[in-house]
Amino acid sequence: MSMSEQQTLKHQVTLLELVDRVLNRGVVVSGDITLSVADVDLVYVGLRVLLSSVATLEEPRERISATGAAP
Amino acid sequence: MTTPAATAPLRRNDLGWYLYGVAAADETSVPLGARLAAGAAQKVELVAEGSLVGVASRVSLQEFDEPTLPERLRDATWLEEKIRAHEQVLERVLEDASVVPCRFCTVYRSEVELRRFLSERRETLQAALDRVRGKVEVGVKAFIDSDRFTAGRAKQNDDIRQLETQISTAEGGRAYMERRRLEQLVASELERFRGEAADRIHTHLLAAAEDGLALPLQTPELSGRDEKMVFNGAYLVTADRGAFEDALASLARDIRDDGVDLELTGPWPAYNFVPVELSAE
Image (cartoon, each protein chain N blue to C red):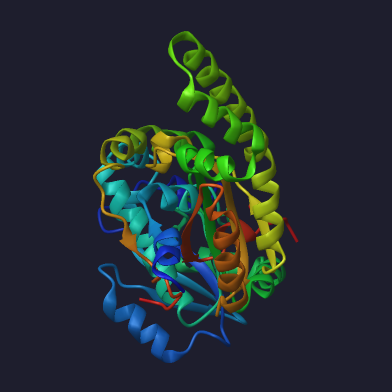
């Protein structure tokens, strides 16, 4: 794989990516305590401020290298 | 859910079980259990119930219960810590075993309740596990750089090339008019291309994946990039990712001259490929 391809295939994760999956997806099971839709909305509101302020500052955490190997 | 425990007043030391996800007993080895128990800030335990294993931590019900949870959810620091912990535990399981990830903040008041869930929903959970066995989720986003798109199109499109030549020799008002025509031409080309690109990317990647879906596009504010997002997708791929990485590399080569860059995230637990709600059995 060439250098330019390595630059093109960036592997990164931001808090937003996590929020979209951890809060928005995954199995909703019948726990005794679970987040309601209203709770999730509340979390988005709280995190939106945080995310928009750090989005441009945060160094993306490398998850898998450009060659596809695990870290 | 109305149980005696749910209505009884909480004592300071009451502990519940935070469920991160569910794995198969035949994939979760003793060494995995030991690693999970040792490494995390929060001790992680494997609660085995028949063929299934709940990946869980004992947590303070004071911290997670209804009266205090809404307040906690407004605390961005607390949230980020818990969200990252949720993901980190699942990623460590994913290194050894397939896992059905649970939604954030799924908490049981007792081990009995957790075990009851695992045994009552055994068939649905097993079916969900079978679907993601040996597979991981990969996220793919595509962004278009309009300057590079224009440069690439100028090489292929006679009208654009001709206009650029005219602009370089024209003067004053005429040059302005020609430039406006060029901008409009490029803008309509870009619009047409963006419509096609999403389908093209998804079709290409889906052929190398077990399953895939298109997710909502993100605004620059959320994606953290100035370029326009043209595609956002998630794919269920074999854990070695070989065929999928090949497909990504060839796609990246094909669309680079169109000004499109791909951004990859993962491997993730298969959040997008498990049932949103477990049907009753």
